[in-house]
Image (cartoon, rainbow, N blue to C red; front, side):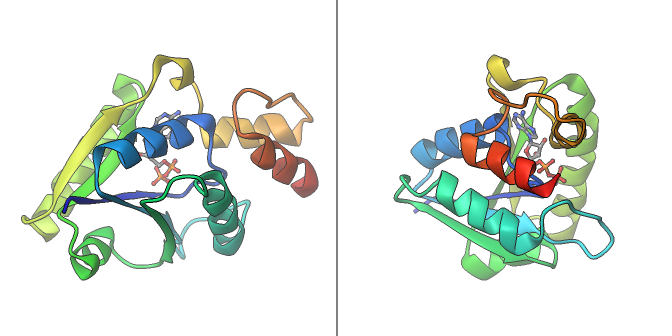
Length: 157
Ligand code: ADP
């Protein structure tokens, strides 16, 4: 039974995130999407809002769980008995950061491996921070995020 943990802020989730979720759910027996809630970060959407949005996006995938977590991801993984953390990577610029994060997590728990999944080329320019900015200026985010996220952004601004 291969369980994988896909952690992120998902503030808000984009089509790129959703694509990684869909591909991972086909690859692993169980996919746990972890909505990270870090006290030091400022989010546009609350953890509960991000969780509700992600849940509705993956409602049609039978082997996916969505949960909010405020602690270390390796601790969450070991708690549920997962030995793999999944991270999506877009350009090379992501890689350096993700590589360091992966090494840090490996240092914390050598029994847990980080795997990287390259984004689909259709989504490699999608970034939650840029999408929030675009939405704030009433720009058109259709095609970048699922319709319910576009609606949630409209409601926020
Ligand atoms: P974090 O704040 O932990 O980086 P994000 O919500 O920004 O959380 O991203 C979660 C994961 O999804 C990260 O591994 C990130 O690199 C990846 N990701 C972000 N955007 C995309 C995209 N367009 N395609 C594929 N993966 C992505």
